[in-house]
Amino acid sequence: KNQVEQSPQSLIILEGKNCTLQCNYTVSPFSNLRWYKQDTGRGPVSLTIMTFSENTKSNGRYTATLDADTKQSSLHITASQLSDSASYICVVRNSGNTPLVFGKGTRLSVIA
Amino acid sequence: NAGVTQTPKFQVLKTGQSMTLQCAQDMNHNSMYWYRQDPGMGLRLIYYSASEGTTDKGEVPNGYNVSRLNKREFSLRLESAAPSQTSVYFCASSDRGYYGYTFGSGTRLTVV
Image 1 (tube, rainbow over the protein chains, first blue to last red):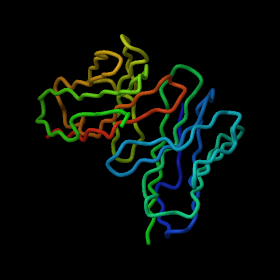
Image 2 (cartoon, chains in turn purple, brown):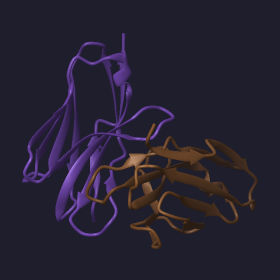
Image 3 (cartoon, helix red, strand yellow):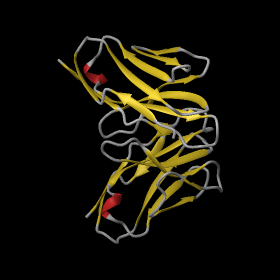
Image 4 (spheres, one colour):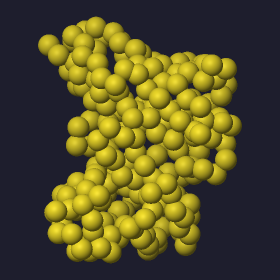
């Protein structure tokens, strides 16, 4: 069964600190992996999209990594800000015409 | 601003009532989607429209109907609302399924 598992479920960090969120997937055959940020009460917003051949992609203070062999991805947030408080959702697409598979998200709280 | 617009933002229904959630995008995207998001669960696909004139069931279609009115608009109808349909509903669009999705800001629906 195609699944996306994220860890941790929730995380609290101090402003200015770094953190790393994890995503493991079993989706096959793999096409691409996406990280979305979802602020409370808003829709998800895309941070990165990575294909099989990409193992690192950055978007400002956000850096995503992908290991397609082990089917793992991580999202690293550098020098966190209060505005980084949100849910971060890992989403995987397979190469067939099937719907995206969403993880349940990691809820990040950045505190002063 | 370009994007996906959903209406209404909030709605309370009584069990058995019907309503239609509206979604419109102005990015000339071919594909549109309806998702629901429940606490502790990833987004789940209700219905999608790969292109104008086509609609297909997603993971959780029971109790819903959709209409792709034209390329811009994709509506979701609840014919007889049930408490189990209490959720946050998101509409999304994409140029083609491979690329990133743009989500609307959501409709929070409560069925009592």
